[in-house]
Image (cartoon, rainbow, N blue to C red; front, side, top):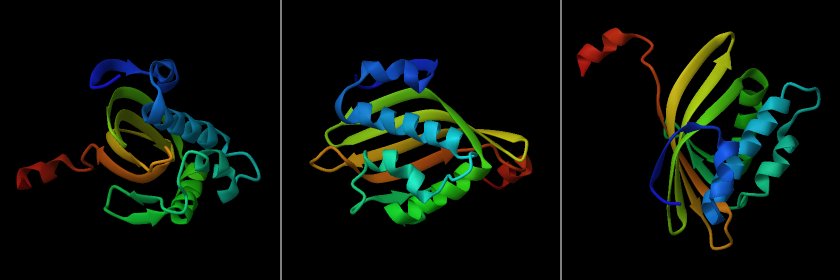
Length: 154
C-alpha cells in the first residue's frame, strides 16, 4: 500500500495490510513498543534490544534524531535503554509511504514521563540495504511549544 491516508489506528491493526520493507517498519514499531513495555522489569538492559536488532543492519546503522544527533546502533540502544526505563510510550498509525529502499512512517506518539503526557507527530524515514535490513533512520518531530509566547518571534 502506498500513499494511503488513514484515520488514526493502532499499528497492530494495520501491519497485516503491508509486506516487504513497509511491514518491517511496522514490525520495528511494534517491537519497540513491546520492549518498552517490558523495560520496567528487572534485568532490562542494552542486550534486551536483540529482537529489534534482527530488523537492523547493525554494522552500518545510523540514526539521526530530533536534534540532528547521529548515533551508531551501539549508541542508539544505549539511548533507547535509558529512555525505555523512564518513559511510557505509545503511538497511533497515521500514514505510511514506500519508495524503493525507503519507507516514510507517520505516527502520533504519546510519551508519559514523570506524570506528564506529551503528544507529538512524528515522521521517521527508514532506509534499507539490499538485504532488507534498516541501515539508516531519520526522525522528525512536531511537538507543542513549551512557551507559546515564542511564536511571536517567527
